Length: 377
Image (cartoon, rainbow, N blue to C red; front, top):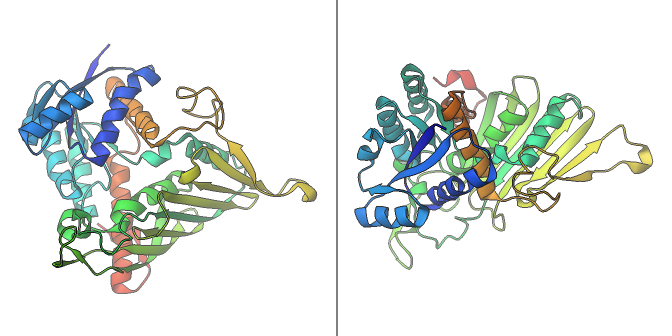
């Protein structure tokens, strides 16, 4: 069996999720390649070594450039802050590595497009960490829509709202700076629900957006009286039109008090409606017009072993799976794709499409008009 040797850059919140998925994937799925946790890169040699021991990687380095150039690395996994994604990916591609990159793919769609073109020219495979569409429940929703069970889709309403920045006394974070993060809640959160919208309904064609910085300054650090300006949006929403004709609304916030995992969607069709919230990720609500009038109403489908990618984790319906399990499905796709040479999805092309929509929403707000996504590079 072909070895697929992973080099991972960054071991913070999302890096730890990736590490858990690497450890779990071989025990859950019959992978097409042998997953090898080869090397970790972190900001200091001591931290890198500590994380390598904790996460089961063979080697450690404090220089990510050494990792991407290492001949014993097949896949470079980028779990760094947004502003480093492009540089790291381009360097990895230059060395002929396949690239697994967290979202958003880049600070803007122009950079994302360069990454797409470089990967195509080099002939390397790519994957972007839009893990929520890997949830068996959303895979089931996709199947129901594709089968025409709710008819023609006429409307999509999606949110990704959380409250991790809702406290005005919370200190400034790199996510609040354009140079480090690019967009704010749009880039960090709505990238996921936009990817979900395109997964379920199809390409978004035009947008009309609104954005707002609500908490305009934050303490430099915990307890500090020195205040620092927040540079990107706390919340945003957009009206959208899909290429297939459906209308839609997308909203996002990092200051939505009480929302811990507020990725939700409602897909309305001519024959019925689907409703989902990630906070109850093993449940899908379905309404259909063809039920008898005295039996109409939303029914709850409990996802179980009969549904896509659920049985490998649990053989009982309703027990559910978790965030890290979605990442494990994603890692399965990564290893199988690299082992067989088959393209993976969502790839850099999809990451660029999402970045282009994000930039279109920002331009719409700046210019106070509807924007066709094709206007963006």
